[in-house]
Image (cartoon, rainbow, N blue to C red):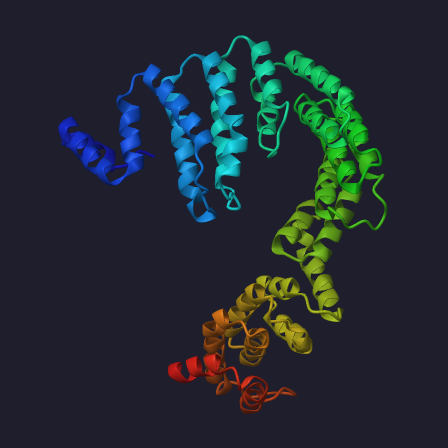
Length: 450
């Protein structure tokens, strides 16, 4: 979509825009840098890129995580200089490679816990490399540069270039890369170094859809295969179109294993669909629905067994939920989502002693839904659990929320007509005063707001 302001800016004329940019550059280093990029010749932009990259390597000031977003923008502008100055693909891939090879200096000078700097390597630099490499006729040279860059990878970022190889190189060149990486792995005495080369082979094998090579590399890397490895191997076989073999690998996972259960079930669902095994697919979808009741898992099940069975399925599952012992906030949310408000209220009331205010995200949505339907007692009990959680933890930053919950409870108390076996508001309030009356920071906020 074109920004409607564009035509208005064009109408201002070149002189007005030039003056505005120059005025902005006085107050913004980024704007000043952009102007220099725009007016530079391609050769000058290449020199700007090389000069900035060299300057980064010499920089000594540490950049904290609060400044990391700004530093990431600086790196993005550096790549923009390269994009603006280089059209020759060979020169382009060599300079992007030089950017990746500066990773040690770049990551050592900053705190990238935010991930901003890593994203520049994984996305901006990667996309620029793919653009140049796709246009380069000498594919062997591209492969050589990728392999050279990946002779070491201290920060786990250079493998980004291997992971995108399939987008710019033909299979025969990729297989030559695999052969070279295998030689490196065979010569490597360090176990970690050997495993790193084998992991790169795995990436390339997956890109060319060679599951047997992927399997071989994974076994050579780890020996005994974990559940995660079995799932990874099955996924590559499935991606290559070998559905039966993918299924056979998933069958190797021990019965009752819950690690990466979601990933395994996603693969099984796709396998059963491709095999046309509606019986196994129905069983799997029913298990997924029962383990996590949502309208999405219900919809997926009904899409297979037929939407005419909706009432029957819901009736059975509501009975199952109400007969269970434990409280699952997701089950209460599901009952509300399908319009079973009476059942949802009964479900929570019977398990009110299990309400845990630490799960404030889901409990808040439950409280709001119950309050909107005038279910005042169950709403009260949910807000009580949220308040108690804050007070017991003594989490002062959350006291304003706790004060809001208590004020909400004050208002709700006049709307509850039947307290059943639960303490009324006065008794509850007396209890928390006795237990937390010394938390003056909380009570002072409550008294001020009262």
